[in-house]
Length: 236
Image 1: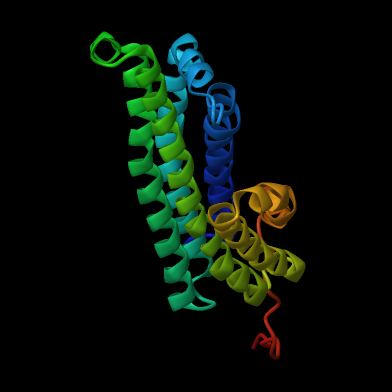
Image 2: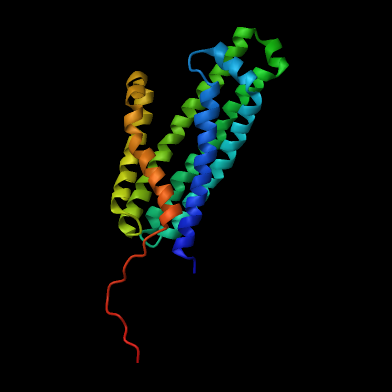
């Protein structure tokens, strides 16, 4: 028998690895290098921080399977609530991980074009810089596509957390709201980029809060053991 507390803490540890490595790659490395609309600065930043870009690339490849491990641990923890919903949760995460890993090729391509001489020789400096920016742009939009499934996995997770009574029910509601926020953010950025950029801090806030609370709850509190209803057996 797997202890629910052990499964919860394992999922929390894996989730923490995802947060650290993914946050480093996305919020630090790419934010330091990628300047949308500015090919020259993006290419210069890539060359100046080539080692950092490689580390960020590896960090993203590390966090991706750990995200799947999070879903697998939570599946074992919550499958008793509804096995089909738990399977859907793992499926959404698996799709997100696959898109994320394939999408990383664009970042690697940007690094190769910016730092390897044959590309600079074959293309003009302006052409090489534009290609670097294009690769980062493709990575950015690929990440937005993956975000659809980053959002969708929160829907079954929220349902399972709410029904299981192992977590506060408000957390389950917040996770479901986070799903909607991620989806609104993705499609707004594709359909109306200026509006999407303005909405972004507000619509993704519920998801960010919910995921941070979920991570901390798993690590610190574990899970609540639902009270078993029914008569207490009397010893003979």
